[in-house]
Image (cartoon, rainbow, N blue to C red; front, side, top):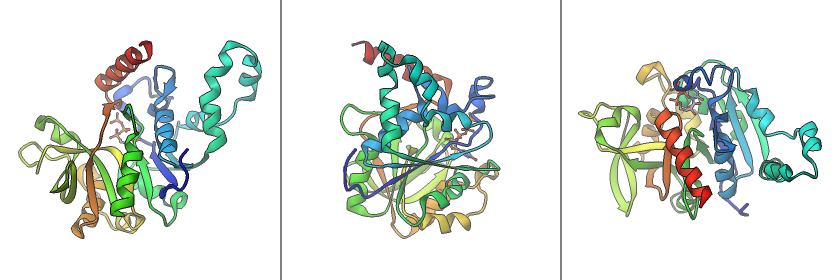
Length: 278
Ligand code: UTP
């Protein structure tokens, strides 16, 4: 873990129902679906640790207890495999448990991503924080996406969203930004729209599941009315910050898999398997 990081807390909104994976997600959180031997949320926690964060704040909901159990010791299991070749399979998760603090709160009603982030306020307090949507799995051979974003935060000291260029046909699945390119791949955002139709989209630059947010976002979220599909949208709250020039969008280095969809999940599994075999 890096020392002296400017951001200590990473928030994981993980209360969604994961309906695209039913019936697998009927009694199991989507965030616990494995890519090879690791659940999605563990990849996210490792990315946050690599970026210097040591407090993982997780917004859960009903049926998500497996997440808490995963980030806790399992004495019986550890005793059982002690001294066998399998012991090393728990080494990574043991390291995470030793180095990080986990804090949980529940979102009682699923009123959208913005509402889930607001629900995390008591765990975050008055400091800048990162957000990871664990179903967006990001991989990069050198620095992780959140590490890249912390470097950018240190320079700009404002909210940062990670973006990627998408096929314009799919703008209605993402928050879409437009802005002025101030450095190669870095934009000062002046427009943000949640899930616009291709005809209404201001660009094909889509927000993915990585954010750094300044804490004034909480007050803005409290005053944000339900938007698209009756949910409180983080995109609408960020647009308020963007009006005063306080949102940067960053074309990250690396690859994102949308593991909230079957296609992305299978692609991630195959590609990470191929990589591990090499
Ligand atoms: P998604 O749009 O992927 O929704 O949420 P979902 O419910 O998880 O999955 P599907 O579409 O039914 O298959 C994006 C992220 O926001 C969180 C989800 O857990 C996911 O990480 N979220 C969304 C919440 O925590 N609370 C909400 O009310 C909505």
